[in-house]
Amino acid sequence: MHSVRSAAGGIKRIAAIACLSLSPFLAHAADVYSQPFAETAAGGYFSTAPGQFLQYDDFVVSTNSTVTSVTWWGADLAELMPGYTVNPTSFTVSIFADNGNNAPGTELSVTTIGNSGNATVVGDLLGLSLFQYSGSLSTPFTAVAGTKYWIGITDPTDNDNWYWATGSGPNGTHFALIGGNAMTVDDDMAFTLGGVAAAVPEPSSAALILLGGLGLFGIRKRQRQHS
Image: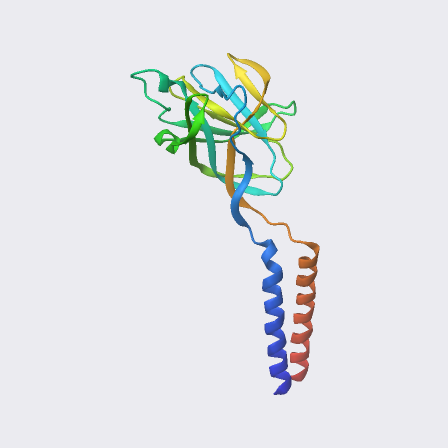
């Protein structure tokens, strides 16, 4: 009887250790990539499909991640034009693979975000209202760690006055298509990707799990021998 209680206590201790050591494996919701707004001399760049001003910026996640939402910043020159509606009624958010030549390639994800991108005034940009926009992707996007992707955020309407604000990123440049002409342009663009990042366990955690499994196996073996 004593040995059964001891075994039960051992199992409980092993289970507790396993639960604690498994915690680093659990995925967690957070910003999986961030290039927050940072005002530069340019302030921003027109990104409107009808006007053929298209801006794209690259990103690389540090761990395998599921991207579920996007936040970005911008302004609208229509604010200076009486009678014009400020902000497009919708935005197109697209994610592309890299084409191998430091430019967007195959489109991997596309989402139309309505309600004017849920625009909220958060500050000032070169005398205009700085808006923060946000929305959920229509289908979660799986980003592989260490892989370069590109994001494009455009006004698909005939607004033609919206521009994407500059951000704080790793390389200080982005890719643009202006009237069909490809070019590399100064400044990173402002955007943040939200979602779930897969946690990477520390070696010590992995060792605890292995030891816990071996201990549990030994306890069960002794139980069978005493039964």
